[in-house]
Image (cartoon, rainbow, N blue to C red):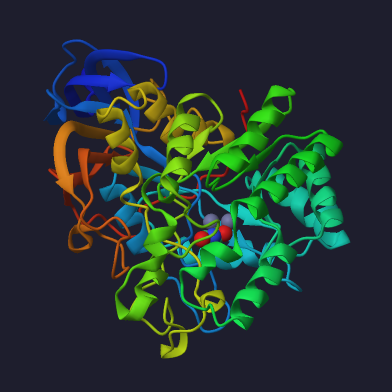
Length: 473
Ligand code: DUC
Ligand code: ZN
Ligand code: ZN
């Protein structure tokens, strides 16, 4: 290697783990990219000794909500600055939040607005999914195909929530556009009419505390919608990805479809491994504290948690995302809307988790529940491929961005909200002890976290990543 090939950074004695390989070497970085993997690399301008640490590709969080415009005076606590800061402190170096179309508005307007929110704020790289809430003929024929070509190759559709849900016929039309244009559709699968009927019944009986959120959205409601979404995918003959799968009933539907040869992909999230319905019944504030754990689909029970762990290792799930949906608890724009403690149906849905996603899953590696390679596949490699960012993201290889996490597999950490970097005033995982934590995190070769300490990089250094075609294999 000659002088003009000098290296900006050399990570020495790295124990590199990718989705498929493990090898020991030095990693050479120039201009933000990995340019050399080898032994005895020449001196770099900066040198880091990784002995005793794993070198993992930075996490890709394929489902998180940051600064998403909300109705009814609600506000997400994290914008692109605090959200990406928290992400990188937890070992994630790429995020893919959602540019959400409002009914009656254009998709292009949502994308332009969302770029304005990210620019100058993000500290790590980001791509956007779209949310298609109003698939008018113009959106289907023009806007959506044009946006797919411009680097927005995945979009989410909802089968519930009044301001977002699509009819069955609209779902079919959107799936058809995805098929014709090579995009990937993510589906929020819960049956809207069942939820509204159950909600009215519970509220009519005076059962309004946060814990009744779980009874308004039982597993059958998710199972039915999952089956229906699978049927739509079969009819249109297009792959789909069912997001935030909460338990065994939906898993059974997905396995059934996969067994029939349908390309049904699935995602789960930390809340379905670590929370149960009991967490929506936390006793504080006369039972209202359970609002902290209200999310949809809701957390279920230990048997379902075990089924979700199993499905992470047997190929049912392709990706493990946070579904970070940051609402402060003690806040009139958050879990106590307008300063009230309303009935469960008015509590904003979602839990924070962008920083704790990787440590919570890695604890499963430490306990022998899944392999290191499965961990990398679920949290980085597979989301990078599905969302059109591979091989720039999702692996440690020559030519990839130097998004690298040096991870201590033995560090024990008790999760405390006071140590996290999001702007939310709680974590649902308070007090949980995990084994394994990121020590140093690099984004395009820049060290954003050193010895667990955030290094205050320039806000706005994060770059938008136009997504290519989904890679399903
Ligand atoms: N459910 C969603 O569908 N989105 C955000 C959070 C949640 O709980
Ligand atoms: Zn959802
Ligand atoms: Zn979500």
